[in-house]
Image 1: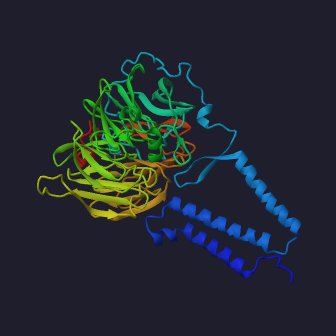
Image 2 (image 1 turned 180 degrees about the horizontal axis):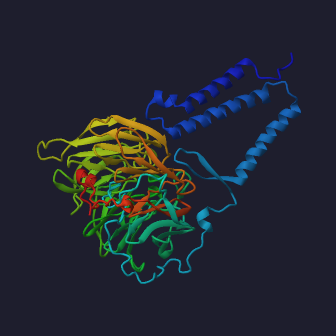
Image 3 (image 1 turned 45 degrees about the horizontal axis):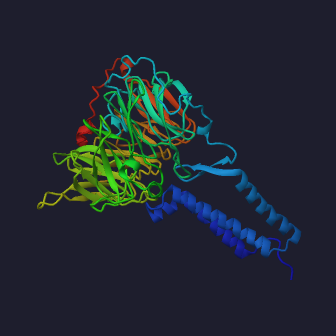
Length: 567
């Protein structure tokens, strides 16, 4: 009996079923049925597995059961094997998107950051021209991660929303080293972190021209396929001093006017952390930006420790260093770190440093690091990691969100009962809302706005109900400027959206950058500074004051509502 030349019904049914399953996954039905645990990245993985299974089913039938000539079978089999060997030999996966779509390069092509020129004075500060008033603080400054209040919202300038009539204009564009750092701006100086070859660099630029003024470099490189290359925190600028944390543990205090290093510490070495085990536990690189108070620089700690201290801690959650000297003042907690930044807030009329650790949210006394309270917030820093910032409302409620099937929750402090630490209980928790995988939610007028697994979403804080959802922007970032949202899409576009609770209304879009962008945008006056792992740009934004409407005084009501006592 001759063998068939076309696949039998059982093979066709199997392949058709797999293709139908792919269609259901891509349509979003799986996410509707399985719930929040299945995000876009999981859908992409499942799609790949199903497609591979369909191809293997056809290939196995062709090679083992079909009636085609043995020579043809051998040619196809060996041809596919040769193609796989050649592909593996000449291509490499350089990185992935936020939804785990691979980015492929030739094996002989160096990473783009290695092609950038290095300054001749590598490893030392490059003197700038006389600073004059360049570092004088102004109401338009954006001096740290997520803006002056640390909550992702600013009230000035008042942007003109009519981008069709008055579109933003690009002022400058230049190549930059790798990394997911944002810009911090004081006066007309913009500072960021970047990776060029084997050097992790703090670079200062003229915000109006983009020209580099100085750089400080250390020999360090963080690189993973899933997390990309380079530093991923944002500098903090205070009193003319730039404070930075690198992906591999370097903490710097740099004089802004000259680029002179005031002091530097490697936090991993200083705290006695096992670097190899730490890199495996915090797989995507240290991302927390420095929290700077009147006298301290507070940063995430880490673990595991090489030699646990006498109190038996296996890790250190937070460490504080003196601003002037870099001397370690205190350490706090025993939890592994996450990718969030410590915040200074006032909760129940008490100033505390709040840290989102690997699997908890904890508060510490800023004077000595004593733990005041904590509550569980599930996660692992090498898998279902926490990246998003906690935000305090009314001095007793804490909003927090993340991806990986957890979503958003609003916790409230319970009334004190006895002498123990205060307890927190969720007022609501929604696994399907505000799944902020790489980003942060912005709170304004009783609502939270954010990219939920890449789709812009508005949620009522009072009851945790969705107000609206729409617009797929990928794993990007969101910044509130007045009554508008500046959405940095993952593909590099910047989209202007009304900060409204009734519906999504897009006001305009610009192709701000080219390529994958996980970096936070920065708005300082009428300047929009954006960057990714390859280029940086400044855009001039149209503002209402140009039409005779005065800008606001710069007070951010969301900061007061959140009880954010950050300096």
